[in-house]
Amino acid sequence: MPIGATIAPMRGFRQGRRAGRRAARRRPALLLIGVLSILPAACQSRSLLERAIRARGGALRGLVSSLEAQVHRGFPGTWEYERAFVSPDLYAWKIVTTAAPLYHLYDGSTARSFVGSAEVGSDTSPRAPLRSHARWFAVVNLDRLAAPGVTVTPLTGDDLPPGVREGLSAAFADGAVYRLGFDADTLLVWAQGPADLSPLGSGELTARFSAYRPVDGLLLPFAVSYSLAGEPLADETVRTACLVPAGITPASFRDVGQLPACP
Image (cartoon, rainbow, N blue to C red):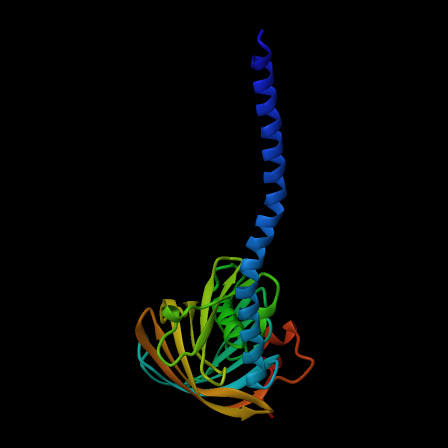
């Protein structure tokens, strides 16, 4: 066999090994570049979230509100109700009626319904509508978005509606995605995401927040306009509000007699 016939394959083999080593050295660098390219966007979103919480006045562990709303669909008219929320997902909704009040309570695992003090139903399924209520208020109260399992990314200018200066998207592990927008003072003025408000309907809920007022040192919205699946749903006004006192546990959201209340 000619010598050249032996040398040429060996030379090609050595060149291939060198190329492989160079490629192997490049892989960590390319991976690092990819990670570094993601970090600015993630840091920007976390920074916006932190600034929004500071602009509000700090963390919001929980809130009790008495409200009135002009409802436009389902059961149109003036509604009166109370709402309590404690982070991360404790939720209660008391609807005032001409008879006994209707209660809907969620303790983080079970949704319960009451007429007066009598329990009339419970639901532990992942699709219980009240779970989406609790998730919605966890999102718009902001603090939940900093927890593990939530991916926060910035919204671009094309994704921001009128009146919104900057925004972020929050994706949960179950696939639910919410978008939030903030004004020049970094106060939340817009939010959008999935909600099941049965029997009023379900779909993409959009909210506009305004009329910020101080509540125990925090700036909170006292007016919210909602639309569901693109149709007007309700215009809500907060009459009174207070922060939830210490010592509230999931047990407080299993019995209407233990719900937190304003003084």
